Image: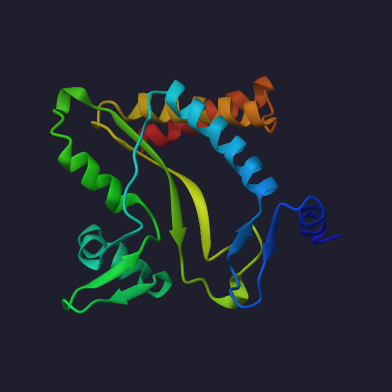
Length: 196
């Protein structure tokens, strides 16, 4: 019962797992088609909420992750690659520093905030083998990686828009409880976060 989804995925020829590379998935044509359909929905919803899609490198200098503070906090979960030029590189474990680079290069003024970026980030993390759980905790996976650059004054609207976007996306995927009680609870949490 615990791994019925793996059995179903194999029967539908969606993906395969390999003992020689734990934590990674080999997507088959049927699975990739399903994954691309899901990405299409996610992209459409993001675009409806004024997010712009970006694409950033899968390997970048470790300096980038040092500046952002991610290297100190997550080094044990990163794949570092030493290069001949004495500089280490990192296989993308997250997209935060990459999106900051896009923002820094945008030359947008404070008056043009918020700027909303998203990317289907192919991330790779050095998860401990005991922590791996098929499709739920992987070493390599694609995530909807979104970042919003906002003024302090615009934060409440950004958070409200994010909650609304999440509701729309979950509704499109058939996951959302649209009861008034549930919606009211989300709004109460938003106001609490904004007060903090």
